[in-house]
Image 1 (cartoon, rainbow, N blue to C red):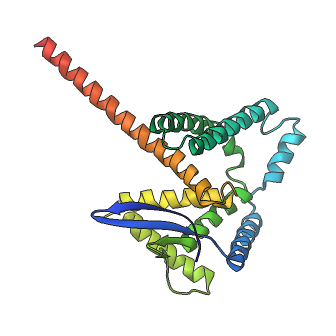
Image 2: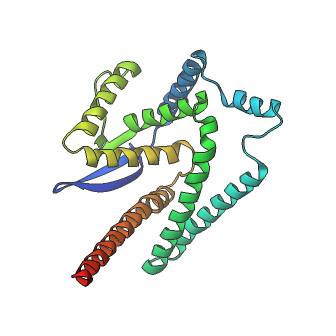
Image 3: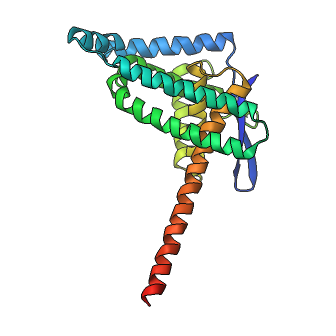
Amino acid sequence: MKELFSFKDKLGEEEIEFGLIKPNRSERDDVDIYYAAMLSKLMNMGVQTKASVDKYYADNGDSALPKKDQSYYFKLQKDLADYQEEIIRVGKDKERKLDLYIKISEIQEQMRKFTSYYSAIYDNTAEVKARDKTIDFCMLNFSTKNGEKLFDVEYEEDFQKRAVNQYKLLDELRNGDDSDFWDSIIDRLVFMFTIWYMDLANSEEEFSNYYDSYFQSKVLNAASEEEEEEEEEEEAQEEEKEKK
């Protein structure tokens, strides 16, 4: 059982290691079959495909994504890749790494705004819905907790019955006493499986770069917001003192 990537977090005093199992060839076939089954099901339900969306724009003499915007997004992707590569090269220079994490965070925010604007065009297509379902399938079947499968349930050979039990366990974690902790863990696992499924990373180092650049930037943003709130509170207290 080979892991693609792992990360640690603490629940109370307990430190827990979470990981992503690399599917073997047979399991990868199961993933592809699951996607094909979901896609077929959605198409039979009448959900439009990407091809039908593109045809609509082509028939109306338009494009879902103009060339100017394609160039803009390509540049963002290139800048992001350059900064992520530089993080590897700077070694132990913490000050430079922090600067790079901030720049990466800013680019990711620009990319998020850009994709959120255009993604609505394709969000409801059969391909995107099938992809999201398949990523959830991967998260439920190939996530680990301290080396053991996180969603290990009965009905090993029955996809549908196993999925019912896995989603039941997922709901129990998300709605239990430690819901905030598990929401954070599940979100991170889904993010990392998305990176793998979309073939954006293959080595542990590549996964680590994505994990650090995304989640480290979120920590930095949260810390920055907390500092701003403290400064505003101090300013408000100073104003109150001056009034008195």
